Image (cartoon, rainbow, N blue to C red):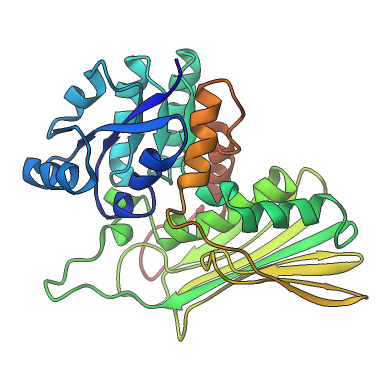
Length: 329
């Protein structure tokens, strides 16, 4: 096989620029088919993006003999079902994060694929971007000495329902699995796993402080990596402003950076002074990881983001949010 022919299940907003064109622009990769339950929208996407075929039935896309691998981009509640169907057909999976709506469900997906020897990758695409790979290199090559601890801060203004009163799917547990820490906070925890290795133990408290919806809006936690590095985090999605920052502290300096602002600088502070490092942001932010996944499937490299690495982040999120039972608790 000289190229991977991709199909997309759920060609919604995230696929318009972040990911979809990346399958067409990556080397040895092509986008053959897309699927959306609304056939008219699937046809429109295919026409605008130059995709040969479209479907309104996921089973038909999975069964298409000219689709070698499937990218699952619908809401999290749909992920595991589609992962299983794709893996049962013997086709590799690249799935949006979070992989499912619970740690148990995600573990089931990983085990299902492993039993069938089907590759499973998860779209923690920052692992493929130059900015975050450079941070990893600095941390692992002693740029701030021996790492001692890390701190994560993420906060945002409160999200309210729209004019219809319906909340975004990211705040509906039956679709997303929980609060915004699962959708946006997960990126930071995954990056820490990428830079510092697996987290051994984690504990936390989750609550709903604003009462605007049922899922948690505030989480605090602490953890320890297998390496012995300590970590703490605060996520508050009912604050006065948007802010996100990770600081990695070593015995010879620190590194600070934004998780969500891919174009933001990386600040490196040592006794020699302060450096501000800048990096270009890819036009299609998932394209670097898509390239790595494609190369992995062709035996030309290894993807840094897999079902197993994602499952470690799902486990930490489960521990941080354990004990939350509803608004006002």
